[in-house]
Length: 237
Image (cartoon, rainbow, N blue to C red; front, side, top):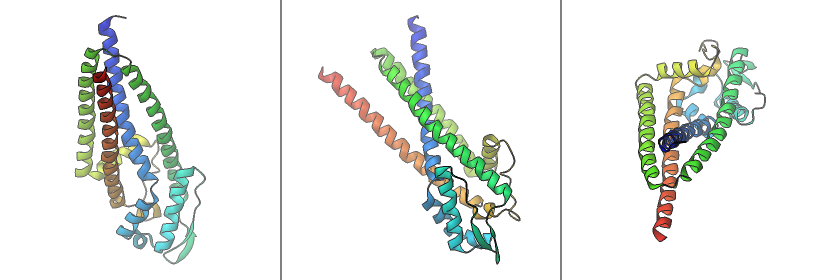
């Protein structure tokens, strides 16, 4: 293999690893928030969803806790009996149960995707670190900068669009992730969409953005420490 070809492959691997790391940060933030019972209850109480759902606050909390437990374990979702507008009935209808099963499958796919991305990104990083030529490291620095800038530009563009028109971004998100229209719920017949209205998802999206920033800062600090230790080791030789 010629030197230019080898260098090109190394830089492609470097860019791919950077993108995988950033995608993993996003996925971890989403997964973390999707399983955060406290955020569900806090935002439901803030929005007073029990009034629109027609269910006592304590029973809404019970439904939310059962939903998060379902997402965490993958066990069958318990269709909690509630008093809705004075009538005793199961909280979910069949369409809602089918959609939540899709959401649970998606979260499990995210979990395994995170594991796979960590393994692949780690392998690529180790392989790149074996290339110890100084020139190669200079090129990798530029490649990492370009990959990071490109990813942030795309992510920032989507975030700006979502901030300006969250409903359209949310609609596209569902079209990409789900192969059916079960997620198109009707507030007049489906209690799930009344319990989790658009404002609920806006609040959860903001939590995800904050956690992405936190995780990115942690990863950057760890990488900076690694580079600093590596340079100190080279200087001591």
